[in-house]
Length: 271
Image (cartoon, rainbow, N blue to C red; front, side, top):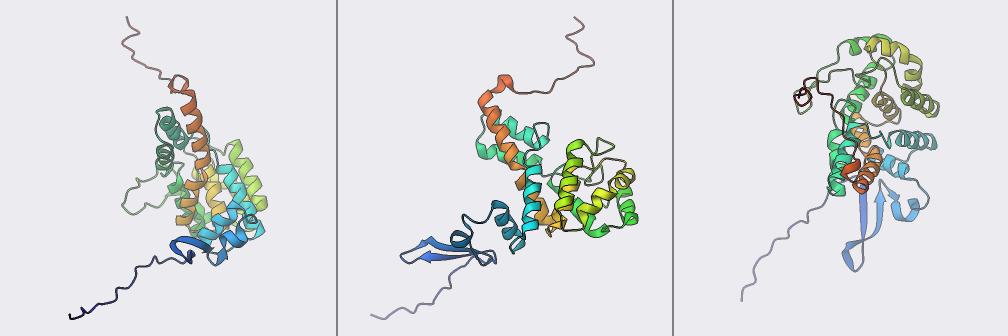
């Protein structure tokens, strides 16, 4: 018999700078050790590092300093639960009370919380402002007077300057408090400058500073890009959405806080 010629086929490999795994000797599908940007996750980090350390390492590719970890942890706490009046959390509540799966509740929160009005895309746009305008009052006044239009895509043009509240003339209490605390923790320039310049910026915008603006400044000070900040904002707000979805699932639809409607022309009321 004549042997058939064979050609070696190169193995397909996942190309990533983030993660490197060593397989078990007898099972190539099982992992013996895993490195994240060179750090031994299960050998050196587990039991010693915090969750925020892992978040920072995954996205930045380097270990967080103690100051950076404190700031990211404080930001995560401030964003963890936007509350039931937030549209993203309310979407998760609707999914929960309707009997949807846990995954569906979180997807609902992510979908509603992704946009340019209080959502992650607004944080992205606000981070762009911080990187482009720096700490120049004149540059900020020009940008707030005429927000730049995004290239045509899936996002509609925002109706208010990113990082500011479309419905209020000044920052609310929790936004002020969050800004004060984060500014004392930050080693970057944006948060302290924002805390000092907030009244002038609110006057220029004609609106109060929003939590998205505070989050954007913190994420820039932490060294994240706008794309990374957008991802983190989506992620850090999920715990509250999950908790409220579970609560509404347990309470049932009879206790669900539906919005009250005030009909100006109620045909039933005329009878």
